Length: 121
Image 1: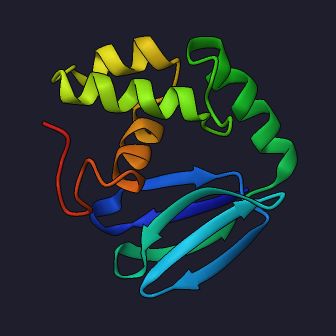
Image 2 (image 1 turned 90 degrees about the vertical axis):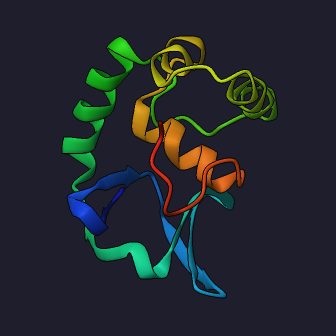
């Protein structure tokens, strides 16, 4: 697990075991599947997080958000895009997808629906 510290004191935890660099973007992978990406210019630092502490964190997060830290499925991405185009609020997306707000925002950026420099309105 990696903690990715971003500009503006924002961060996200990525369940990655590998990262690659692709034209100014850092791509995070776990067991051969892409699990996230961030523009290299937004990243301030990376920190390896203890697996034991992350297990507890994931268990706690899944109490409120059952899909937290899980790999996104194509169906979930399609639902996210549909709800995004319907102008759903972040709270509505969280409830519909069972994910944490940061995970939803990261996926919106990965899908090109929310710009890297845009804030969720």
